[in-house]
Image (cartoon, rainbow, N blue to C red; front, side):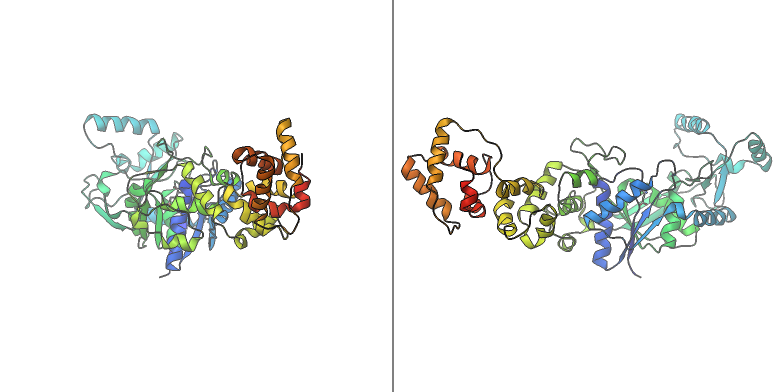
Length: 456
Ligand code: GLU
């Protein structure tokens, strides 16, 4: 059986690094097994789902290096879910309930006051046809609950019913179906909650492994029962720990905080995001890997811890910087070209500046400095006099990496300046900035004429 996984975001906002973790766990799991990856948009909630968000999610995944083999939208698949509903109704596994939210809340409180677990007591199963007809006549519409198989013959006498699965990430897991309420699968207005469409799609698309956040652990017991009620074998499951902000709050799609799009716009490298999203909260050391193959070699779902992991944007920046600074010219050339950094100078320029940038877009400023001229700088009269003398001492061409040393030694000898008093004004005159790449590397890029043009 070919490994088939799916990433199933609801397109209700921008995906964040926590969602990227789920997507990447699936992607790397499939990649290691030579399997395939389905992107499934959970857009049954038509009010909150947006096509723009779905499109943006595809862009974000592509940026991270994830190319789905198949993309489906739940909004195109209602016929399939309706068939499953019919099947469950025929089997007596889906039953109509008429309680309002207030009535349910009241019952919950009563159960709690009697020290009973606050689960649904299946009262709707006792309704006679007349009672149901009376509710309908009142204008009430039913919602539909799935009858969990947690009893022998009388649904009002439940018994401990353990569902086990060997979680790819958390190891052996057990939930007791008698400890939970029959889940609502269809709302009053006929719309589906997430639970049933997800199972129907997992069956239809031949999903072999469901890898998702551990906020879904409790859903898994009921979902395994639904797989079985629909005559299917449940897939394998893996539930990874969730990420929080440094202060411990959960990440949310709706706020756009730490969204993949905002990280991209801020110039963070995609492999830095991917490496951190995968390795944070695992026993693997976090470092930035250059590509998915390298990252896949360090991906072990079972090494994730069970508690949530704190995501620190500063760590992401450091990883991104280390990737950029180590990037060979061949790899970065197309991106530099798109920024207008091209021609014979491009390679030596990259080698000169890469150690001094945080983000790739920082090269643009340095390229302007090298090819157009220094940024604006102010000099004291004394420094200006010194600089004029210094520029008059520029050695003849050809220039190479030694030129800077030869020149500054001569300047030192003639002017008597040394250390900061010597180098700072020179750097400022050449670049307009008081720190940056080695001037020994920059000088040959400027050339004698380009350098002379900077004489204040
Ligand atoms: N749409 C669900 C979510 O985003 C998918 C859960 C699942 O993977 O089954 O949480």
